[in-house]
Image 1 (spheres, one colour):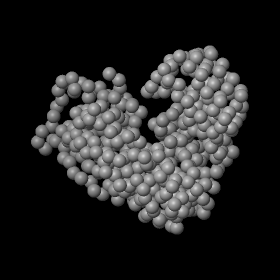
Image 2 (tube, helix red, strand yellow):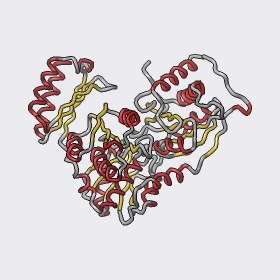
Image 3 (cartoon, helix red, strand yellow):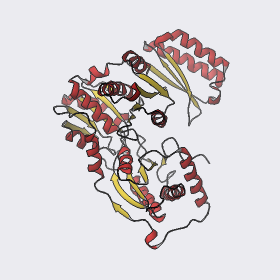
Image 4 (cartoon, helix red, strand yellow):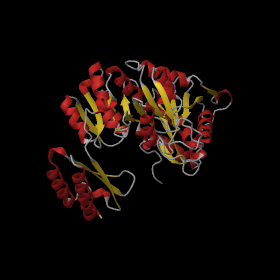
Length: 452
């Protein structure tokens, strides 16, 4: 049986892969592991539990709450809120554990469970492994000591979570955005109420789409993975910009006043310069992944900002930031982490900071985003090959060397084995789209030949 925990918690089709029994069992196991680690020492443990609007979140939340309470943990149910809100409240309320039920940008039938440690930080891999081991031991019949009487956990609603989180977002903004017209696409997800409220309190005129979740429509043809409706709405309403979230609102993509996409790399570039100007870009450094567009790297070099690159995944960005004290990092997909104000990617905060920059400078988002030129990028997935030999094949190394020589300093090649599938991702960037396409196809053929 494979590892339950992936790079972002436990995910699967709700009620098929991710069952109520699994949710309950993992929650019990998490309580026991944290107790053994000393997290609950000297006090009665408390957990914050939130979810996105998926229909399956209702029964999964009930299972998680039952598991925690049966293990002696008091539970604060915050209801439908973004992942970063649950992380924030876990820290702000001094809770010992946070639990978020969401499958992020995945389709509605999926769901997931993500645990946060005290302070709202992601659990260490070692703790996740111990939770999984404990869960499997319990599932195989190993008994555990069950509290009784006053020892069982108590459950109550925490209705102040929404206002507390929105107040936090407004409190960290560098300036208001009065006079700005913003369209928000909430993906019928966890930010459907939070994001419009935060923008309105910050002074913006807000137009909303994708903000009527019914439990079934999350991410459906809307949000950060489907920008067409947002583009159209921004142009139709003559808005200054548009902001799109995913289902759990830990990411943000944007659209300028002409309806052009502004991706995570461009957002990072804009915020990096804004934070440097404000003196909050610690060590004059921004963290991004190796999949960031070459145009971003060239822009940061030109502007004198240091760039540190990590493996793909916001968890690796966050690890690098925490290890070296950097303040800003993110991914092309729109996961942007402002570590002074959030412990995870926060799509609402990112959108607010981007809009605040537009308001503060009086410049359009298109003008601000033009700090970097997004070079054409071609990605080809080569399936059914031996991905483990990517770095050892001499034939492939020669093909890559030829490609890099052809592209020169204005292009880039990246070959990356998938972490979950039997395929290799071939990514090529070049100043010319046709050149990028030609080189990428040639490299894909070489991968098939060398590793097939």
